[in-house]
Amino acid sequence: MPNEQQQLFRNAMSQLAGAVNVVTSAGEGGTCGLTATAVCSVSDSPATVLVCINRESAVNAVIRNNGHLCVNVCSAEQQEVSCHFAGMTELSMEERFKLDTWDYGVLKQPLLRGSLASLEGRITDIAEVGSHSVFYAEIDNIVVREGQDALMYFNRSFKTLSA
Image (cartoon, rainbow, N blue to C red; front, side, top):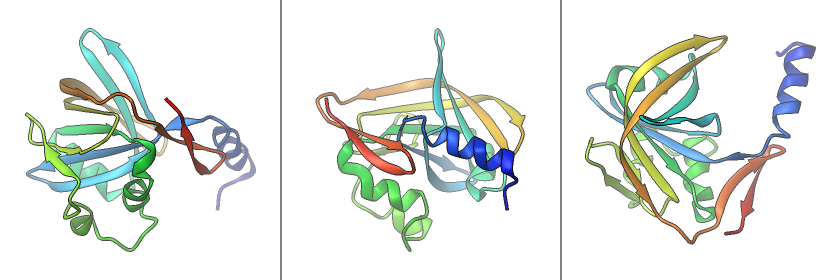
């Protein structure tokens, strides 16, 4: 149970609208993914993003072992797949990747078909901060698909941001 300060922080962060992303990884450690809003650009030279993942998540260890990941920026039409990867449905990890919505990029990472963008990269650094690992990934492959509405998360619910 969170203490009062933790709950206040969580409440404050729920007021920070965030893009919904399905972060995926495939490799020796297996194939996995999760829904995340704690994703941010770091630099464009070299193109680098950061992804924050709870250390208690099984996905954390798999991504760490694989050394690669893909940030798939979700379109408004991808709320259902976002719910699957947030663990809000009964689909197992294996069943999530059996959905007919996946392509594979140059680094052989799962790319979510129809997403606004897919950024496929190599993990170059990991920082441990509190309960989370911050994965830094240099991006080697970028696919952008314009003209769609974005899926956002605000005040503990999904929202749409129109193009």
